[in-house]
Amino acid sequence: MKKFVIAGLFVALLLAGVVSHFASGSPDGLDHAAREGCTFNADDEITGGTCMAQREQEHQLADSPFADYGIKGIDNEFLSTGLSGVAGVLLTFAIGGGLFWLLRRRSPAGGTH
Amino acid sequence: MDDVRAMHIANGIINGPVSAIFILIAVAGLAVCVRRAKVDLDDRLAPMAGLVAAFIFAVQMLNFQVLPGVSGHLLGGTLAVILVGPWVGALCVATVLLVQALVFADGGLTAIGLNITNMALIGTAAAYLLVALLLRVLPRTVGSLGTTALIASVIGVVVASLGFVAEYALGGTTELSLGGVAATMAGVHTLIGIGEGLIAATTVVTVAKVRPDLVYALRAFRKQPTVAKTGVTA
Image 1 (cartoon, rainbow over the protein chains, first blue to last red):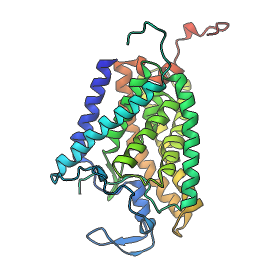
Image 2 (image 1 turned 60 degrees about the vertical axis):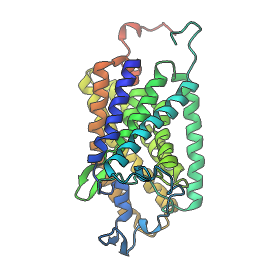
Image 3 (image 1 turned 90 degrees about the vertical axis):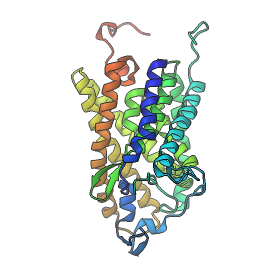
Image 4 (image 1 turned 45 degrees about the vertical axis):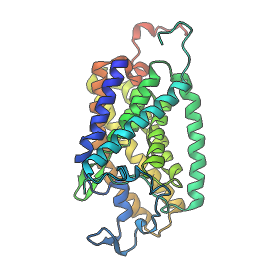
């Protein structure tokens, strides 16, 4: 079990840390629908029309150090995205794994752990 | 342009009251999941579920092109329900969404109930119903598991996208044609669902080959007939 989890985490870290660099930068399906009906200039600002994105408000935590899958202060995009991905994977594993470990049925005394 | 973009519902697209109602719906839904997950979670499933959540976080960062100028990413519901079951699976997706909203500023805090309802609850439930059905009727092969993952992904992702359409109908802050929004969302998400399906199928088939005992859906729906004789109750 331990070996499998470590191997799986390694794959996840590789995907979030390195492969994420090659992800498409196009708007995703939801964002595409939100932008439909508006026109955009070269800086991606709305220039006209009616669309959901016009009513979009800034995220409450837009100034967070990891906002938008980067790390504040690191200008190199590859490093910034990659390291934020690594941090996200470890954080999600810690929070999710910790929560599930606390919720689990305790095995009878004398278990292997 | 190869930085990772925000990918979940932002604040302001759905009005405050409807967003608030969906926070209540999400909390209620997750509370049910926690109660049921406690029955499933043991020393083996708990670390596996942590891994599934971390893996979904990683793969959600990998947007793939579905049309010129349009990308998509995994939602993760199908992968999660096959590997760790419906209740724990929904909690895995919700964990990812909470981390993304609270740490990565992706998916508005006001909109968190909308995002959790669509992706962790509705999409995951639809995927699980298909998995439960298909694994019972398809032949007991690894190929069938892959096919199941593909079909459940397409349906699960489209259903999740229609969750957004329903929320938009209830509380959209813009006056767009509902039919148009529904057509765009369902159309694009059919393509995204196929992408998700290929990723989910590859992942679950790999796990099934390496450690079939760690695949929840195989334990649940492919119990060996030898121990399933009638009259024997657990």
